Length: 298
Image (cartoon, one colour):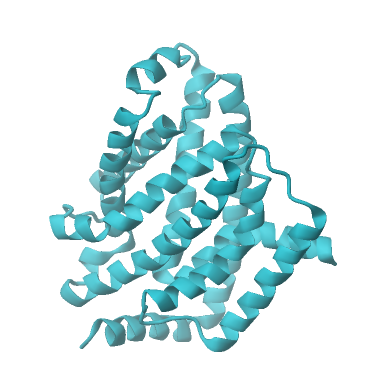
């Protein structure tokens, strides 16, 4: 049995038997994601300027460490099954891990520089269209159907026209580079993750290729990628640790809230990409901005 037939049968069978339930869960998941994203933006809007902490690489590295700590704690409590990360799996996850690391840094950079509502928000509605295109480029076993691609193209085009007509404000010149780069990395990462999951399901049982295990493996690779990036960054560990308000309980509270919310958002997108589809994960990422633009058109 090939990867395509096995993966397609698993995903299509699960979705067909619980189609109404899947639709309800997707709606609930979208609402939860939007609310968590708003809360994270609120916390970041207070924490970063108030405590003068624009060290996005350090925050990204800390988020990965906290995520690993939480997952291993849940594993010790018997709530999450985890297995040791093999070298072969780490190698397969290298590309999405690099993409995820850069995406985390770019997301925090946009919030630290007030660019999250500029060009970054304009490129979000294009994520579903780009993700559908990458699913064909990477030859996934379950690419979107033709009518879904047409609907996504119409939706993305409408949002793009609405954004251009209302005007785009660019806060930082680097935003012109970082925003399109973030969109491309999102699409590549989501589709590559599903490709890795399909390949792993061919050689291993479902228990060893669970969402939690793959998420944990990606975090392990991201830890090394971001750790190396932080060591090479001008704002190294010594400067960041010396600038923190470590004696303030509010500082610790805001920092922990920011890192945990980032972990939850990343896991929701990760699980959606593997359990539903990369296109659904892209729709989840862009849902809030798409609704805003459609309302402005109406």
